[in-house]
Image 1: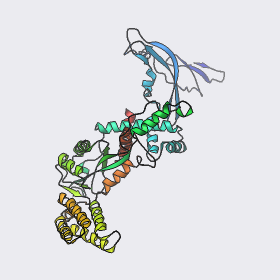
Image 2 (image 1 turned 90 degrees about the horizontal axis):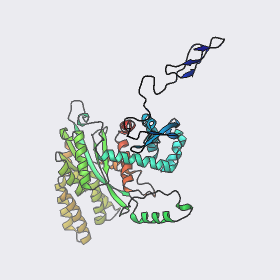
Image 3 (image 1 turned 90 degrees about the vertical axis):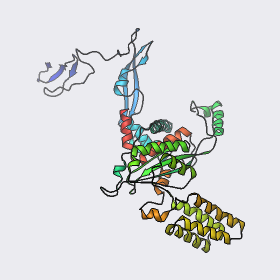
Image 4 (image 1 turned 60 degrees about the vertical axis):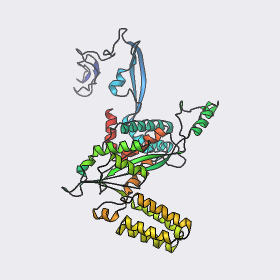
Length: 437
């Protein structure tokens, strides 16, 4: 160690043989290095070294955006004929596959969950001091959405609760309620894709900046996405997933997720849905262990209201009195008594249109005669409204159904997967796994 006249240390030789600047009276600030004497050199990569060896192609600078600012790293790039290019420092730092840190990607997904990509980019700059373009925002979010949808389809998600957590009182019976529904999502059609492709082929400024590849468009402007939800009576535990597939895909999905929640071990387990044929069929096929399938009270009420308008006229006192009377009958006496009242009124009507409307309502109730048994369900403490399922339908597709929005089907399913993660309380868990990955 060399000292100046005042006795202060100016430089020191480190244990790695590199001279370092010293600060203060005898105190030295050490700078960490990657290797020390006596250890095997990590770079260039040797584990996959081919017969031709690795060639140093020089140093290149890469940029990595983090929540604390942009990180620029100057590192050596190696190459050989067998393995191609290799950048060991990028692998060591965990930046070989992404130019954006998990924190930045999470912030992008948070901001884009409730607004357009352009607005999300502006909000992110204002709130998080992270500056990205709206196109970069779109690419980051859609890539993360695709990852979320892939993980969901593979069954990697698991709710943070099971039937053991769904007890009204400690030691009491456990209860899980499930519901399913479909919701229309606006998609980009193949005709719209053709217009975009034609515009992209035109020369000039308007053709610049277009995406290199467009996926295939939908055959219809709207497609039904399907959602299944699970929750307890207190609604403190909720879990929902969705799919762009058909009813069979949702049926397999509901059976898999029900197994994770241990639905079959719950003391009380039943469904509340709108009574659509495909929903009832999937519950009977995939979840036969359910104690009951309840028809949503408000869907039945909607059918009764529509019939009252046809029979007595929309907005009339007679229509209001009749529908309230019919709903009181089904709540207090059950569906059989409601069918008797409908049949009796139909026989009294002389108008063919009114008789046909009453017949449709009668057929609707008769085909689901076991589902609106509200006196029995209320006596057991069952819910007769599908409010949580309807809320999930709105929450999971809110980002997809904004004004003027059209989506590619894979991106729409991915955005719905991100919304499912957040609505089910799995946001932190998901992003912890993304940081590890």
